[in-house]
Amino acid sequence: MNGKTYELFRFTHPDGSAKEWGYAEMGTGSGLFEVRWGKEGHLVQNQIGLTRAVIHQRRTEKMNKGYQPVGRRLINTQGEVRHLPRIQSASEHPPASPLPPKKPTKSAIDIAALLGGDDDGCYFGTRFLGGFAVPNCHAESLADKLETVKAAFDAQTQSFLSGYDQALEEWISSLPAWEEPIRRAIEPA
Image 1 (cartoon, rainbow, N blue to C red):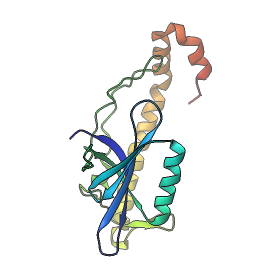
Image 2 (tube, rainbow, N blue to C red):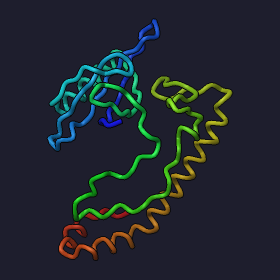
Image 3 (cartoon, one colour):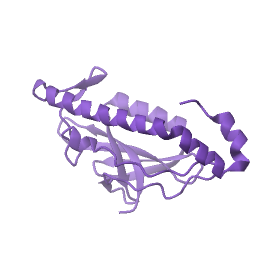
């Protein structure tokens, strides 16, 4: 299914029916956005050419009305909503020089599987008072899983930092004309 990736929000009525609202960059390089809205799973109405400020304002209004974030979803031109694949390919457009090429990374952690999520992204617990409330029967298991995530994150961070200086020097040596501006822009790690 072709389409754009939208940030999607859902409002569920007391009778169980729902409506959705989402936004995506138009992809024209203009910095403008498109919004879509409609019944759950079928967002046929749309508006294009909105600025980032307008999107931010509308997002805030929707959240204040009770819309809940659903996450990123693929929506085609007919307004049909689909889940994104779990593992996405690298960007189709490589960065222009002088940015360094992206190096292959280790496989991403499947958070949904780790935290007990299903294909619809449902997890144990709910948002509560600015945090996340989890039933007591799942708290210990979730804490163990989060420790696993933290350990993996810490290992990736150390791996990145240990090779940072060498990768930076290789990048600079591959772009001698950009050496001075790059060195001025380097933040110590």
